Image 1: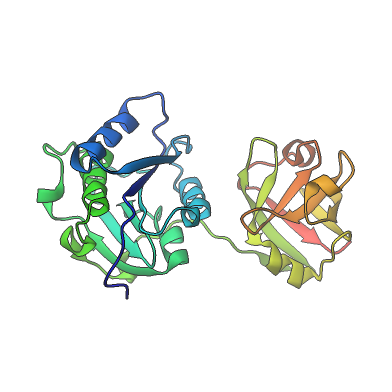
Image 2 (image 1 turned 180 degrees about the vertical axis):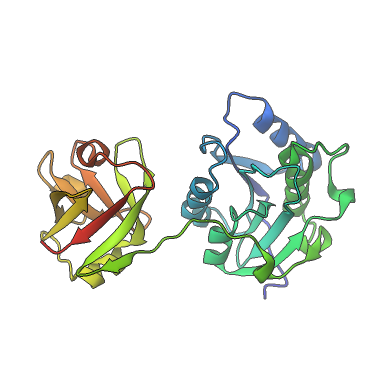
Length: 275
């Protein structure tokens, strides 16, 4: 366990609050009031409302590009004000602060979860604590203090990993006959479809080769995709299966939209099969 954890002075925020409402600004103001030297960075405030899976995926895909010692405040919290617990997690290289609803776990476990505490030391909270805005009054004050050097052990009581709430985010696939069944976990602005498995695993399972072909099956519709290192190699309008910049399998159409071509939404299932 890392008993001499470093801090970078960076606090990074991810929420479903939007940037047009006052909530994010309030959190940043609290952070700077308590830790004036903090460097505040936004990941996203456009997570779909209440969508814990989406938020946890974005956090999982982005956290590792920040300097070690970054403190992440992640708030997608439909259970705010209920009995759900507020948490701070120390992983091998980072800190994650937010609700105990599964939002933090994929990223923290990916980096190597070391310590989790329930935030029960009220002297570290902003007073009065609003029952509907823990992001401002609990999560951010604790994050600011950790970013300015307070040990995570001081801000709460340890709890076991087994007691933490898990949610539905799962990056995995299922073997169905000779095919692999996956889900669409993310669709970007270009209509590229990020899939629920690492490309290397699919490559090994289906014995894929670059410039080879793979069949994409969706609702009894069948499409032929080319396997390439990047979509731009393919002819315009060609469906491509490739390894995206995060290492996940992704379907794209060169200078087009895989979302429109395949008529898929996030959460939909597809199968990849040998041609």
